[in-house]
Image (cartoon, rainbow, N blue to C red; front, top):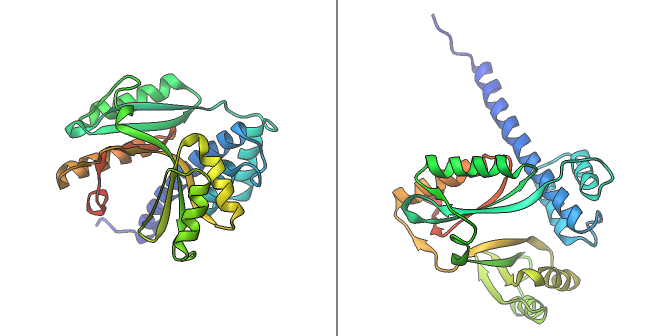
Length: 246
C-alpha cells in the first residue's frame, strides 16, 4: 500500500524554500556588487549600497555573503563582471512590460527573456518599444506613522528638488529625477528621516485598467521573469490588484 510520508513532504517543501532563498540571495548579491562597483564599498557614503545591504539583511542574508558581494564589487575579490541591461516588450493584451537585469552574459539573458515573452502571449521588442510609456524616477518611501509631521517631511524633500510628494498607504512617497536621487536621499537622511526604500524605478505614465483574467495572466508572466536569476525587476503598465497578484 502506498504510504504518505509527512517527513518527506516537509523535506520537499524545505528544499523548494531553500532553492528560492538561494535564488533571492544570488539576486541581492548582484545588486550589492553593482552598487559597490558604481560607488564605493562604504555604505555610509554610498546610499545605493546601503539600501542594497538593508534589503539583504531584511531577508536574513548571511553577513559573510554581503561582505563578499561588496568586495567583489570593489574589486578586492575576483568576481563576475555584471552589467545592467533593460528589455522591453508587450505581454498579453498588448500590456507594456519592462524587464531590468544584471547579467554576465547578454546573449543568454536576452534569449531567456525572449522565450518567456514568446511562450506566454507576449513578444519582445527593440529598445524604445515601450520605454516611452514609463517615467524613469527615483522613488523614496518613508514611514508616515513614524514621522507624523507631514509638512516637515515634504518641505525637506521639496527643498532638495524632489518632483512630487504624496501620502499613500501609510508611507510618504517622494519622487524625483533619477540624477537627483542621491541629493534627495542625502537631504532626507541629514534631516534625520529613516528611509524605508530608495530606488530607481519605472512608473507607467498612464496605468492600464485590466480585468481579473488579464491581470492574472500578466501577474503570472511577471512571476516567470522573476524566477530568472538574471532578472532584477519587472515593470508593467497594467494596474494590478492584490487579487490579481495572488
